[in-house]
Image 1: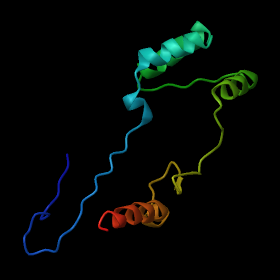
Image 2 (image 1 turned 60 degrees about the horizontal axis):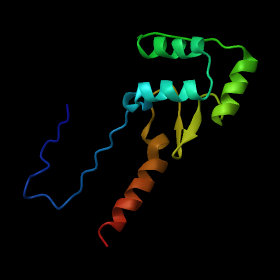
Image 3 (image 1 turned 180 degrees about the vertical axis):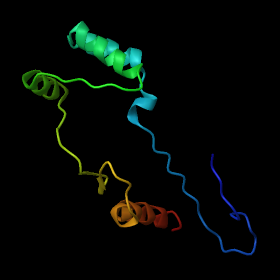
Length: 118
């Protein structure tokens, strides 16, 4: 639910509202396409079955042999890391972010929005 109170009051100065809609990447993935890609890349059916089990379950975990894990990451050209790490200038962690932690991204968004008025 979105709620904006008093945004349309006439006695306030002109303003701008920006809606940032963040969602998890898997919310918008076409899973059948991903499964087809994994098959065409030669992923084992057992691994694909694990992925299918993960996306159809609320709780999941997979433990892979380190060598297999490295091979998958190399094949997919994916970096590895641990929390916290930075994304779009913001330190991401498993904890709620503070304003100070989000400030670099806020500054970028405000700078881009500022050029819209020129």
